[in-house]
Image 1 (cartoon, rainbow, N blue to C red):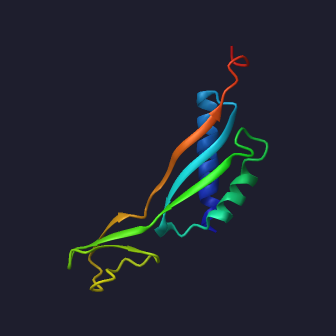
Image 2: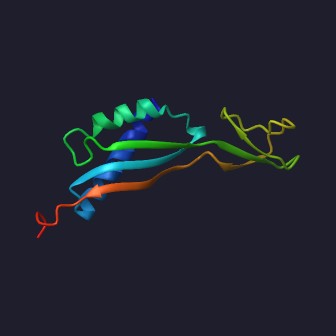
Image 3: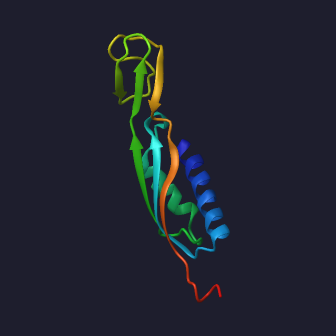
Length: 120
């Protein structure tokens, strides 16, 4: 279950950001994940919720934006997106392709709260 590893990495990164920045609560998280990673967004959201229980990220809304695997063929020059994770040109069948997108794994946006009176 790749989702467990990704959720764990994500929760640790967000909790470190909270600690470093002095944020009291994380309300929303937008994560971009490439399609080649084959992540189940619902499962990842469920796991993330469990990992962040009793932390500043508990109850945060996790939105996952999946980006398609997009390839450029070195043989025929075609740029194409794939639903699967095969690194093969859908036009000519060549395996000589460059990955243009689909490997992403990044925190794109966070909505956080900080109680300024608490931190004076």
